[in-house]
Length: 493
Image 1: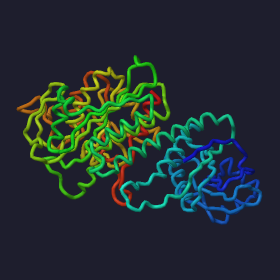
Image 2 (image 1 turned 135 degrees about the vertical axis):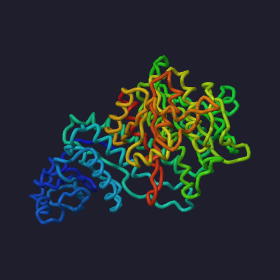
Image 3 (image 1 turned 180 degrees about the horizontal axis):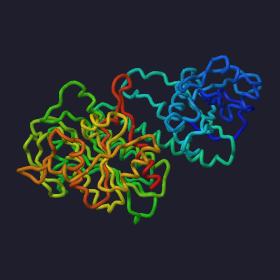
Image 4 (image 1 turned 180 degrees about the vertical axis):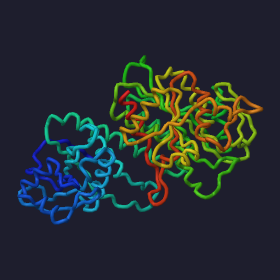
């Protein structure tokens, strides 16, 4: 999708479709008022007639209005003006995209970034608009024999009222476009079937990304290399699979090499049967999404390469396939992690923490500013938080507060759960230093407590995206979250 930012008079602008907002309380936004005046009150006449009220989600397409040069004018309802916040703005943008698709328009001019939105500036409005248009454009077609014809909006002009706002709007569009494409990459990887998207495949994609971007270099560690490093916890997860496990390390260098990096670590279980602790059959197909943490790391690294911020970021993916083969790890087995801590595996379906703990030890060598791991880790997180917010646990209050604020600002929210010593007792083992599960209570918290045992040397946060990484039902598919949150954090800290 091609975006252009332009300062022009909407009345005299030639375009296939001019999109303007209207509020429910008869309060016309400034640019909509200009059109109403030029058309001798045509818009207000429609409001008085009840053809459209301005309720959020409503729309009305007008053809060739006298006094206005645009071929069409699309009126989009925004709800009440005093209640128009970032979420309602995002909803308006979503409705706009879907409406333009209905009319099969390839080009449109949008005035939505001029709408008065509570507590957000022009840059943020432009970023959300570009991001939402890009992610709405995504369609999964890779494994379909007859891909549906993709027609629709291809060129978007973001119209601004004043040239003074062009710099902020252009920056916002660039960020939103890059984040949207990063989300779509994460969605594509998540949606691919597990017989295609294997650990090896993820490594290939990471290397391809590096060949296209000089600021990125990628290393894929083999099982033999991980064995030399003592990563027997990670390796234990893939024991039952014919697919080899890998550790993918991506270095984005946007500034001098001596600048300490931020590190993001993704869980990449490309399929999770549960291993010997086999999952129920119903819905098991969705376990191809158990690598969405890894996918979000790749999507974030892709967005960084496009925007080229002056920071250093290292993306790490711990990837394996969890299968119940003859060599599979068994409940009661004890493995030694890279940190030399021993782990009693009471449940082989609690495998994400087993691959992450070795990756979290590995990243100590980078002397990171912060480390954030991202994982579809626990069903308990879905029970606690549903699919609205991701779970957050952290050993650093400032980092947790930053991530919470970034989640609110990016509309990719998180909610913090306690990481208290009282919960650590649930991980006691009679036979090892730590058990890999803590019983039926507080499952998300005890999973975070497990990971915290391997993160004592740096500031760390854990994002549990089990409820937010993919949708079910008719909209089934990966969401691309939390790429917006990660990018918001990395670009603004």
